[in-house]
Image (tube, rainbow, N blue to C red; front, side, top):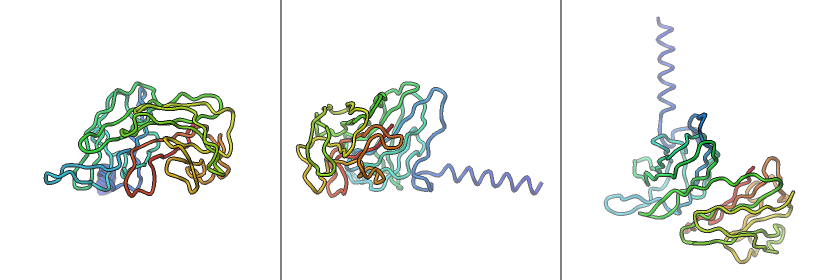
Length: 256
């Protein structure tokens, strides 16, 4: 009986440890259980400041964590951060960013996510007009690609393209995207000495905030080439700028 009691006690203790909220986990991300009819979703914070009404005044809630449908999925949710793909159920979801005192932005509803889909969700805006943008992931294609996720409410439409990474020169506009949309262009079988820009007219050294080389995203890609391991696409994310931030307003990811 004593052995059974000790086993039950260990089980309850483990369950309580796993049910804790924001910031208590040793992992930044805690993806929900996969569903047979589920979706793959990654989530980014594109809002320069997360503000809530505190004592009648809008104030920055500071360090925040993110809940989806009441469950914590990201323990550190900050401007420019992008989660890995998480398993979620299809349908509509509710996102809420909170600080340790419970002040929050949201809940904010997503659009309905279709079974089997892959999506990027980005929280954007400023107090009191926050929203969650839903981007359906571009279809894979043979060769390499460049995508722009236009998630800057202050920029109705943004140009994007490439530049020579070694010299920050030879800018070439390859496409454009309207706010709330993702646009993708094919680059060919492979590219080298490659960088991507969004909403910029020049890329003088040192690197301006609107221009990213592949090596800036992954230092191991020192020759700025695609494909790089399994990655064949450079994804650029354009957010509203954050005053005093060391990064942005363009962030990047190397994707399959």
